[in-house]
Image (cartoon, rainbow, N blue to C red; front, side, top):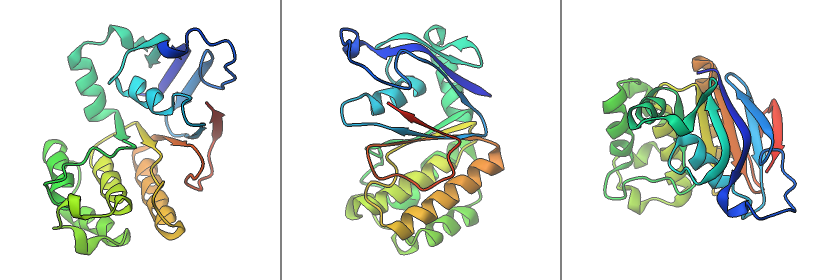
Length: 214
């Protein structure tokens, strides 16, 4: 998949608003594979909704979202399944980890479906992100910042053309934020993928191709 195009898209809850000033809502915006984007937003402007629309978890919007020119509103369940397995990976703001499983089990449960990464590389990511000693710890016993790093590793153990990361470093210090950004960008370059980062303030320091204000 080479592009995601938002054609006059707007969340239904904003349909009556006349004061919107956005680079995305009610605009024609194309996100291209291989490029990096920062979506800056204020709270309540639909940042997480945008991610949910693109990944197909919500459809309560006006306008269109097209993948390589194909209208997502016509997608069947099988189309969305294929999209999420092979084309778009998502790092959710709320992480969506399984608290009763260990950090490694949370990653392996996805990698066992994709068979995309070797265990040695996954362990290398844990080491680089400073959470190697937490691999066998239940996620519920980890801090939110540690969980964010686990969630990112899980997001990388699949093929993707685009990686969506919704406030991925909100609870990380500068050192871990930089390391997380380096690993994410390295994997994106390896796959020739695009990256879309959302933020309401603190964000990864990357050489973004474009910054969009939501």
